[in-house]
Image (cartoon, rainbow, N blue to C red; front, top):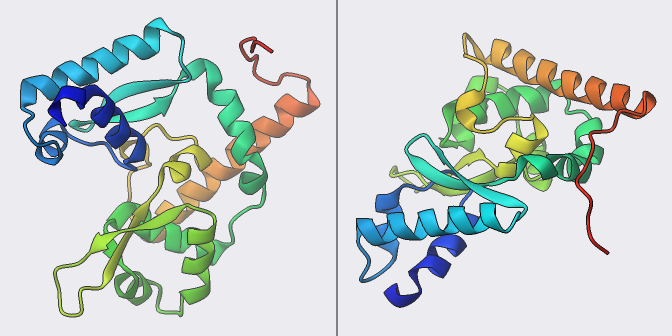
Length: 205
């Protein structure tokens, strides 16, 4: 496996929802070492940039992740525009804020903070691909824990989870997310009405 390490690293970064550290990658590839993983990441970064690919590899919070190349971000926004314009309800926004700020968190922990039944809201957020199961908690019953997704970042125009507004309370966090959602939607309406859709690079037929 180690003789094809660059392809393996590419697959891992593509599949990961959160930044993955060099040590995490090394532990998943038999026969690899830290230097080999770093070399593979650097090779991928250079290949993407040299060939004007639609993705890049960025270093964030001590790990690496695939992101959309800046020149193509407008296409990604179009992909998620319909769901973004379908605004989240206040209960959904508050639930999402709890998960975003406290992840990984169990459904029971979220519900204890909301003090209401959240079955429908959780299902809706999963269907929108804004949250996902990220593992199980080391506790009796091994309940699932939830976290946000890459689409969550796209939905709110964030580069990483570290870019979220500072949290004073869940209500403040929910209000901040709602404000970000409204700001993005307003900017997109302005661009559309004013004919100022972000310029996109030419795409060959």
